[in-house]
Length: 284
Image (cartoon, rainbow, N blue to C red):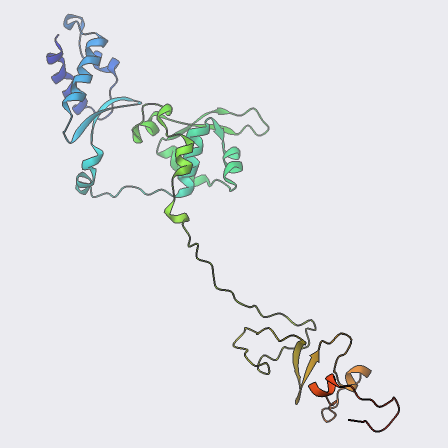
């Protein structure tokens, strides 16, 4: 038979079949009297593929054989004919499927070790129900975990003829995931309120000028903290070994709300008194 006579028969067979057909299956359509060989079938398939140029369908060879399918360019319009929406798969399922496809045969504990999380049993069940993976054996280790590999249905679904047509891992790593984008703008600086050393004492933010809400302004040089005890405010002055406190605090007794230790002014601190210890008067 001539090629022009084979083309209508092969085209009709591919359109009538619900599954892809191999060249051997197409050869079974002819008997010995037709004298059709595999070379003639291959040439007829190539001619049919060329005839699809510029049309809405294409002749595609997948793992299970040859089939007619809708081109990717016109798929958005054709998909409106189907009332059933395409399935959406989780990222965990796709990562598990990718590991099986690239690292097969692989066991479930090995997948969990690579991903760092436990693989849900529902994910394995869904992949097996879709006939995308199957058990190919058992690993010779304690526990005998099952080995998983992909099927022809997996290749047919993703329009692949063999695993060699999978994209390289380098290309997958270079793909940018829009969900992983995050703003690089630095956050404004914010002073965090320090906790007091003594948990029984509370920092009086209202007594310190400039304090707003839960934020505490940094005190000027020389002032360590401001604590509000009753009716007075004690300021601890950091001038080396010189600190101001009440007499009751030094003795460890209960503080007297009426007894307030006088504080030195700035001029008095700058000009120390000339009086000797024990005298009752000071020469100002």
